[in-house]
Length: 134
Image (tube, rainbow, N blue to C red; front, side, top):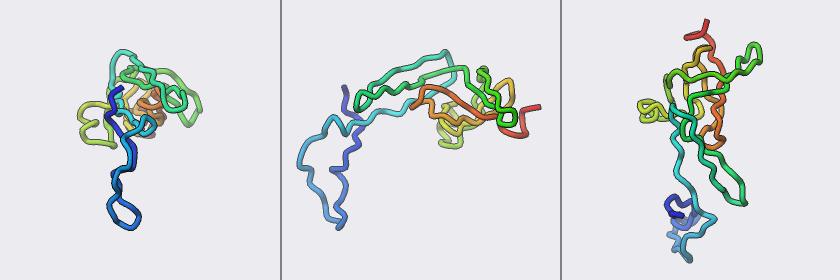
């Protein structure tokens, strides 16, 4: 396992502002992982084991989303036509990366993603009022 993303705090300063000297090396329990940038494409998932044996499903790419219409309370699995906008990051916006809060276009209209695809392995979204929908 490549120890690349590290979430330890040995490099941080003390509350007094003094420098802290690391008293040990990096440990497995401080290990992080790279963010998964979910894109539009053939459904592809990756299952990773987390701390405590927890399993995290990471969605690498998918073309379907579960869209809920809040007015009727109905949820349908529909195809994602395109990623309209990702306000989280201009770069993601340009590359069409789907994260929580991203706006996607579906046959039902525009929808906002409410789940975290890189963390939960599903794309859940709610329909947005106005533009794009009848």
